[in-house]
Image 1 (cartoon, rainbow, N blue to C red):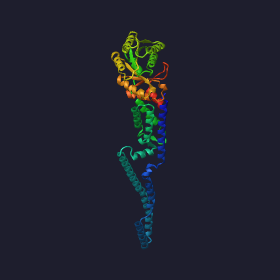
Image 2 (image 1 turned 30 degrees about the horizontal axis):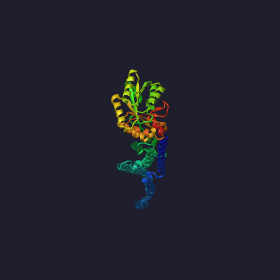
Image 3 (image 1 turned 120 degrees about the horizontal axis):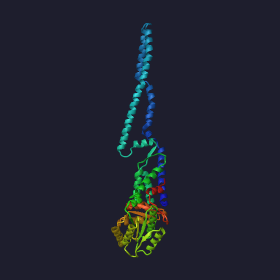
Image 4 (image 1 turned 30 degrees about the vertical axis):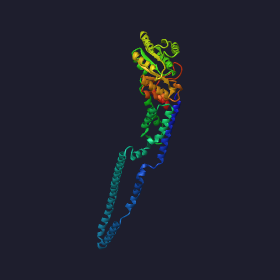
Length: 429
């Protein structure tokens, strides 16, 4: 079911993953942002400092010479007794030199601290300037790069989003629905950070899963709970065009309710089509259900009304009323639906169409909802639909949920529509 769409969505996630990973590899080969910002000059400066400190200045040399000459003159002029004093001075000199040596690291430490403070201030100023320019600044991106991460930009996605749009439209997804999905994927992915050289598969799949779920999950309600809590009998009327499986869906729902302990009566409101009575009677016989019918050409509202009265008298839980297949442009038949709505006031009106009808099913669902408001939809032949466009689009277009999918010819082949399960089957766990 929906295998064609599943393959196309899988291709999208794989392509985005490969593309972003290629960008990450290129980023790995680029020089680090800090090096580009000027770390090399700083290293060169630090290497040159020892050489500068070791080289004496001309003033220092001249002072040393004068001191030496003065010492020699004093030594010649003083008597030998002064040797003791000289000895004391000589002993004191190394201590002074040691003191001077100890003081040097303090000066260098203060100089280093000042340099680090200035660098930090400059970095903060650059970062603030980048952020003022809007978006992620150069400093922020450099920081992400330093931590082994990269940012997914909109430009990285655009070509893939174009491919995704084509894939959705070719799978019969309605145009406005496709645009909604694309906008969701773009919003969920753009600006996201990821570790370089790590898989983006989960990130892309999650973004696509969320976008699909948002469009499929429109208007969902608990069908079983609504039926159980409603006053009995619950009346459900079915509409749609001819030949889409409407009568068979009624029979399947009768089986569905039976399995949940609810009794049903069938009403053939399709009084215009030859053979309609026989078709529904056959289903009723197979399921052991009561059917209410009138002569061909009689008033459909009267048939459904009689079925409701029968249900009340016999403590039946649910009335399932068939109606004639019609187009929304058939004014007289649409007027019949309006009459049923006024006189019977059904608890639910369900639209039935084929999943394989694609865009046609989506357009008919919209038109029927506009002409005679529906509460939900059943899509038949979903097991034969490789595209899935109708299943994705109907709820978003009408604002009313898909409630069931027909998946075969047997009475048990009716599956409740679970948006989360559908999305997981399309995207994968």
